[in-house]
Image (cartoon, rainbow, N blue to C red; front, side, top):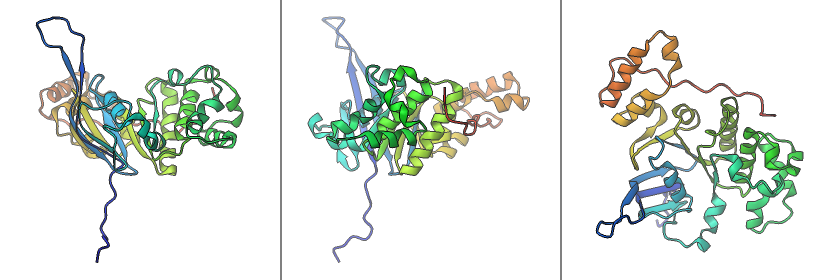
Length: 310
């Protein structure tokens, strides 16, 4: 029999041994050009339909990795595959399939939306780029999908609140019907009261449309709420990866324990554990040893609240 019964589909995203180096300006004629190692041998796989989170402190390489996955930057060495296609060295003119299959939601919705364009044109922009015509019906469908009224299509970004602008950004990302959604700190620029609404919307859309989600954040509680798998980055490397519950409840790497210990733990304080106890646990995590008492879980996000109508 030539038929293969156990054929396995490739993962949605495969990153293998990727490095990215940036050269600084020369400061001396006798010394070599300084090099910044943004990524150091990063490898990961994101299965289709998975909700994959990447956490780490500022400057650890999270956004650089996302730009490489999205084809907006090229690795110095290593390979990146999206839906089984190697994209690391493809010229821009051959990345049309990637622009249709993978879309991004950026951190600051105001700076990622053109203030001179109406919402209808912003959302339809990816469709126009792909040659689609008469996109009014599709724009109205997308606005309703993100919890906004169709008449919002005639307004400008500055006429909306931060949460509403991020909903518009999500609608634009969903316009070409992608398979992969990449979100780079999508709620860090929003008010706390609006974050849960946007996160609930993202989770609902990913579930309903069977999307693969890559979610980057420095907020541990946000990643735990949205994702099922997490990778922890430090200084351009992935130091730990695994199911969200295992990594958060029984972290193995010292940096992961340090990151979790540094997160605010309101429940622990309300339970009567003093600041001295919490500080001792943080120091123990920084030293690479497990604290004697079990750290409390991160504070969960509030339940779904009414749509942002401000």
